[in-house]
Length: 107
Image (tube, rainbow, N blue to C red; front, side):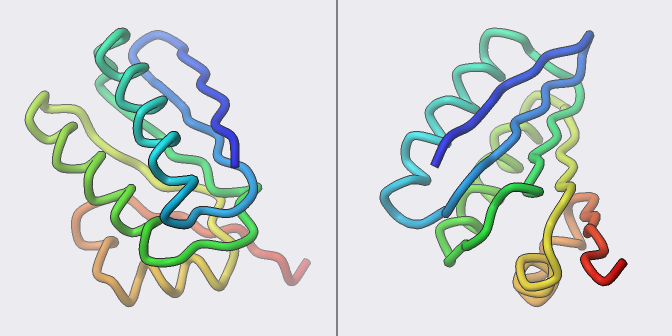
């Protein structure tokens, strides 16, 4: 699992790759949190387009970032989720607190 961080103005995008599980989520949290502390963005986008597997650790990753960002007034946006990950996030109720976008793999 890797995270590529891109900052443009007040927008920080974290492009996630591979699998998100208990072991990989630890490093991802650290990288995203460090980048947020350094750049103080007003919007953080977690891009899941290249994530092919996620367990409940992915939900925890999103919830933890949401809680940290809400203390600073920043917003969190989830993008590029495949249909499976989108469904997991929707069932967990994440769409009630963050903007959640899916990619359409049927085209």
